[in-house]
Image 1: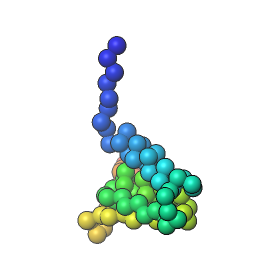
Image 2 (image 1 turned 90 degrees about the vertical axis):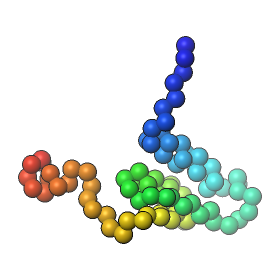
Image 3 (image 1 turned 180 degrees about the vertical axis):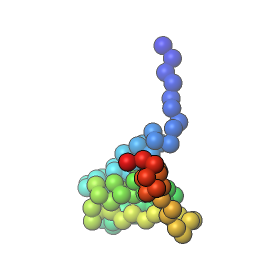
Image 4 (image 1 turned 30 degrees about the horizontal axis):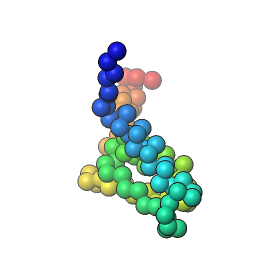
Length: 87
């Protein structure tokens, strides 16, 4: 049976999120400095990744999001809700 591997963004973000937890697990770090995780991209995936890394890591991890766009327009489908096309 042939195994296929999906290279989707969602699977990649799951892998990155899970693997970065090893860096913030107490006792696994070589030094006592606070780990600093940089998330490149503040879209839906990047913002969600940063949120959960900070939520799970708490004060034992620093998370920085780098985003080139200075504004965040709107979540998916929010304009449909605002103009009454969707409830």
